[in-house]
Image (cartoon, rainbow, N blue to C red; front, side):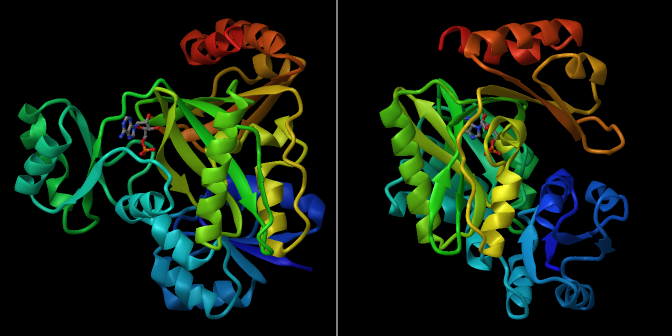
Length: 381
Ligand code: AMP
């Protein structure tokens, strides 16, 4: 019996465990809190990721380690890797944890990125904003997620406010200032790389964010084939350079017909949740296959899918279940403002059918604004 250890016990670990059950896998999840939602389906070890005793117990009970949470200290991942196989490898995790290191790697690999610079002081920020010219975003280099730890600087007059918001974190997690990219579309490559280097990508996913948090994803995104191929080639080079094993997402802006990379997520990704029902093999199953050295499954899409994130609270479940292609995912979390508590995926045979189903659902559950961008994209595809 193989036991997969997962660091982090949120909804990603929960969906990994649910997807691994048919493969005959056992799981052990480690999290810092006792009510982590993956604990409803897998044994949960509560401990601090820096606690060697807890890590030693975790390592002794699993055959392989992977992540639900990318901000596990990379030293802890390295410590574990000396005792048990860890995928993705700790170096890949460390690169993806630091926006500045990650963007430098993108440049090295000729994956285009917007202008950026590391800044340690207010004066450096002022100088870099002047050099970049135009609007910028100040972000923490590490430990930021879902738009947290970010401040938009529309003009030099806002430098003081930006520094007041994030300057105190310059030493602890580092800061990066980026040119604000006036993108037309945001898309992601969700892909998997096996232990032997085999690479497969799911069809491109288009994403819409609200306040920096993913709101809706549509797949397969309508895109010129050469653009999709270029994006997937970037993802393939990145994964090869990191000797990456498992599923990851490369988030991209499409700006005036050019790709600009935003960031990489070294784990299964919210923009790949649609693959549970909308692809031959889901991102969760393929991640497990990859880390265990099993053959990868097909990433072919089945019909058209749209994933809607439920943030803060769940809408009416039965309205989703009543739709022929409606699928419901409740993460078993207590509702809280800003918290991802579940998602739904609607699947249909054609873009036109999916647009109709989405519009009906948006009206039925009072989420017309959430479904609108995907409906517009489907009508113009
Ligand atoms: P991130 O945490 O970097 O993924 O940022 C969250 C969201 O903020 C992104 O998905 C974009 O919608 C937006 N965003 C982040 N960085 C930039 C940028 N440099 N230019 C424009 N929008 C951005």
